[in-house]
Amino acid sequence: MFQLSPQIPSGFRKYDHLKTRMARAIAEDVATGLSASQKSIPSKYFYDERGSMLFEEICRLPEYYPARTEISLLRQNSPSIVRSFGHGYLVELGSGANWKIRYLIDALGPEKRSKTCYVPVDVSSSALEASAMELLRMYPGFCVQGLVADFTTDLHLLPDDRRKLILFLGSTIGNFDDAQTELFLRALSNTMQNEDRFLLGLDLVKPVEILEAAYNDSRQITAEFNKNILHVVNRELDADFNQNDFEHLAMYIEAKNEIQMHLKAVRPVEVHIGKLHMTVFFEEGETILTEISRKFTFESAEKMLHAADLEITDWRTDAAGWFAHAEIVHRNGG
Ligand code: SAH
Ligand code: TRP
Image 1 (cartoon, helix red, strand yellow):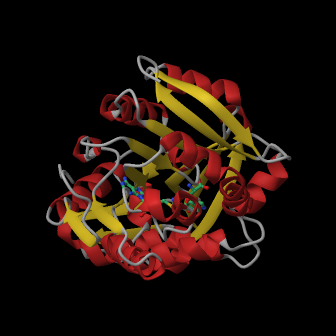
Image 2 (cartoon, helix red, strand yellow):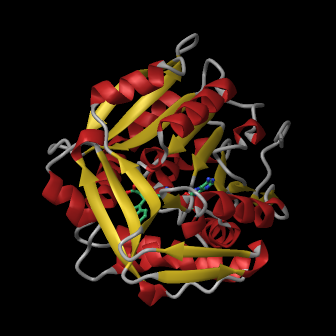
């Protein structure tokens, strides 16, 4: 854990908490995931350098409404969010390209900015560093303390010597299943002091055509992004996945309110994973689950947050009701 007291430094510093752990984690996760009856690979492995770039491209697609809808919410509401926060740490979990945070940094204005430190948290070290450098070009003298860490296990590393506003945008929380959601929110709740605030971006339930189009874009960028996870496994674990053996599949499961993303074997496939001394067989039509993206309602969001002693104090949506920002406090504080 790092502390700023007594002074806010300017410029960029990076704390790499993953360096050596990542290699072991991917080996264990892939071995477990590909041995199960529904094969799966955890979605955090999408985001190598190429994956992070493809995701940025997804965010610019006309079909991918969540990105632009969330930005419109930030454009509108950043001044009031910043007013209730004051200054301290702006912590962003899964910060990616740092696009969205700029609205909040702008809204801070020079005075509060000089008393605030931005803490991007991401597994992708290269994306984190490149984005931080770009941010510092826009706001010279700003304090950026990047944390390369896994937000599913490392929230205890967050600083606690000043008030913080924690942001978890892009509906990334929807990529967790029930058990992961519970663990994540419990850990987050434990790091929150009374004055801290949590701003959570949530994609909302809506007609299936709109949802499915967002994950099946006409330029096939999402398909590319999905298949990139096979590149990552090939490179990191010395495997021989052939992209052409698999096809991108994304569908909305209405009963679960979730998009599921799979890679489907288009023929019988045999894959060797060198570093795991493992051979994996796929029947034709068999899939690897690579991501779920759950969609929320106010009620379902409130229920999951309550279970972790978190309380929604503000709920803002766009006019169409497609995306929401929940402002959240700890139930014992606030
Ligand atoms: N917040 C951005 C990016 C969302 S994409 C936006 O709203 O557009 C998800 C981001 O989370 C990526 O940058 C990815 O590298 C990061 N990420 C995914 N799993 C992670 C994990 N377990 N720990 C930390 N970062 C993670
Ligand atoms: N958090 C994003 C979402 O659930 C992640 C995402 C968007 C994604 N498009 C994707 C993940 C395509 C995998 C493939 O919308």
